[in-house]
Length: 174
Image 1 (cartoon, helix red, strand yellow):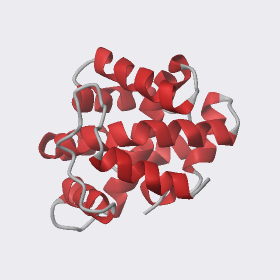
Image 2 (cartoon, one colour):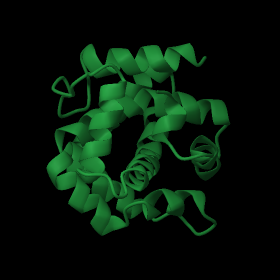
Image 3 (spheres, helix red, strand yellow):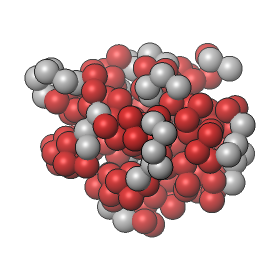
Image 4 (tube, helix red, strand yellow):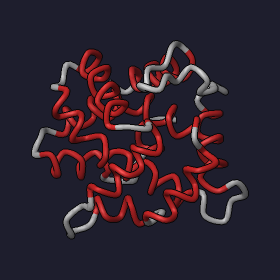
């Protein structure tokens, strides 16, 4: 499992273009944010599936990848469901800034776009699969070594477990 399995084709390029940053920075930011995003999604699979589908399902990723302006508010709504508040999202961005070396403000801008890419891509992959988004998310997390997301803190910090596995997966790609 690598970053390309969690995002649609050209997801990093779209993220970089939307933020006006180099691709390498977009990739570094995504790698730093994904453990918290996936952990938060894994902790909320019951409500997340319905919430994501209400906001557009697989079309969330298409909105980021397409030519129309990205509807960032949809990403912010998903983040609210994952982290509970803007403070939770800010904490996630602050933690990711420490590990990525990127500015927290840039990571805060990246979060709603990244969550739209991930939620939309995984929803598209889950089409017709029993369990919907929660089922595919469980498969993704399971393929990362069976890591649970119980270590996900409300602020998104993951101790060991998923965070360590994702770090080793992403570390191999550098």
